[in-house]
Image (cartoon, rainbow, N blue to C red; front, side, top):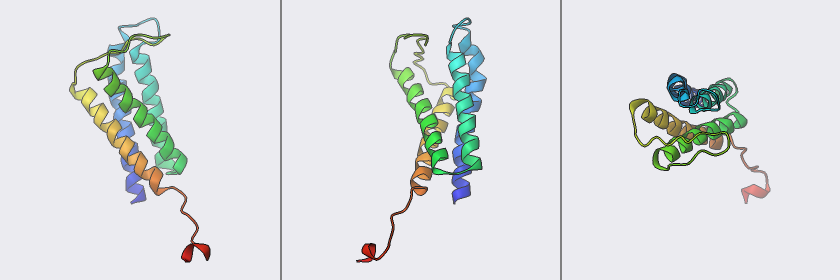
Length: 137
């Protein structure tokens, strides 16, 4: 069960990364000289790949925590920018995109699955309480 959970969590992150790598060039065109959405997509992809590899290699509590953070941040971002027109702030562009299309939906599903799988892994890898003499009353 542990191996399957590790593989599925990593797979969700790798799918997310693949979609973002595929979409990045088209989104960077809106801001060719600065921090554009394409650059943010590539950064998110790198984080997802690293987190996925970490889960595959270690399967530790820390790896699942990182996977949860990466998947959750991606999921929150895609849903937020789908439904809320957040204006540009600092060096970050406005990224409102009010439509669902296949790649965006695939990314959201992979991120959502990654959140659930990483949360299960985090829960399963939690330290268990001691069951000594005091715990057996």
